[in-house]
Amino acid sequence: MRKEGLAGAVRYVLATYSEFSLVALLTLYFTNMASQQVLADSSIAFIVISYSTFLALGFHNGAIRDGAISSTVEGKERILRLEVWFSAVIALLLMLAAFICRERFYLMAGLFIGGVNHLKTACQTVFRLLGMDMHLNTLNVTWAGTFFVSFGLVLWLFKGHALEIQFFGAWSFAAFVVVFSFFVYCWRKLNISSNDRSEDIKLFWKVLSASKYMFLMASGLVVVLTSDRLVLNVLGAVERVRADFQYIDVLTNIYFLGMTSVLYYFTPGLLKRFSGENAADGDFQSMMIKYTGYLSGVMMVFVLAIMVFLQLVGRFDWALVEILVSMLLLKTMLICLGFVCNFYLAQRLEKVLAVAYLGLMVVGLGLSFVFGRLFTGTSFIVFLPLLNALLVGALVAVLFKRIRVQGSHEKSTCIN
Image (cartoon, rainbow, N blue to C red; front, side, top):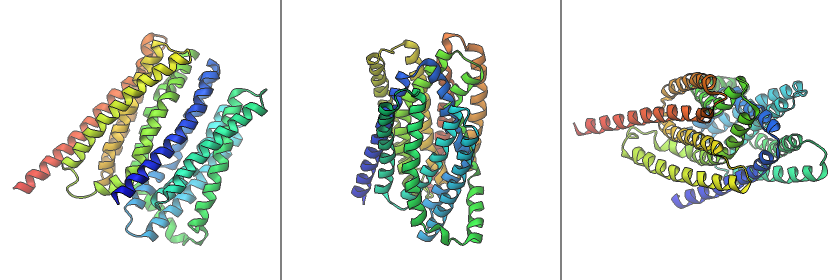
């Protein structure tokens, strides 16, 4: 079983990085070819895509959690049916909003892609919880491959169109065509039309109610990840600064999304592993320390790789490097926080995490606006993400220390 699990993990990692490699190549092309104005304005689309996840109200995460610990296949499939239904409704609302906002291109693109992403999340949840790894990997690689091919064709066939229309148009087309096909497959496989509506409504509200803390966590994560560009847009920072932050965010997302996808894959197994009474022993602590060391090494390699890349494309600038290091530290701390969160979720301590994330969101956003008002227009603005990196690091230390204290208490209790 261990060998099969390792082989599955390796296949998933390879598929995930194939997906991100293709998307990263396209995004890097866009960010390097787009003008400063387009790059600055396009940050609105990326922010909308991120904030559209709020509409899930934490239900996606709640479905994963309850499905992973469900004792029966029937119970797991009932939760997955609700996940598919709910995602379809949210996607429809976002796509209608995109149609209404069709006069504002970046807002329209962000809303439409955000809607498709909800459908993709539903498919990924179904495949993960049903152990359909091949389908999961195929979905991830196929949509990225279609994006790659369609963008190339658009560049060739529609040379007179603006780059932003070509890029977001190809993204929207590829994501919708591929994801919708997989979504229909999931719909049919789960035989959704045969649901017991009254029982499902009760289960839906139960999962949604239990997901309120997960919603606060997801909201806090999105706000912390996007607060720098949100603050710069609200405060009206100069075009060059907004463009630089968006450019580096695209680069660092290659690292962040890759690492979080690996963590995402192992989440159901980690939830089971750390749900026991003796979960706070040295097993989790040693694992956390070991993987933090690995993650630090990957981050340093990534910094060097991006510096070389900036040199090759002729965009090397020490201000960009300072933003790069600040953003990577923030995203590394968030990955560590996600790892610690698995322990608390397994122990059903969502309330503790929700309070922590809510505090992080409020304090982080507040300090970011203060920092932005003080230093927008100065060279110190490049350290805006570092502020949240320090806050997240402090939160990780506090939560990890609490686990160590709990583990020590359990051991002393056993000895006595």
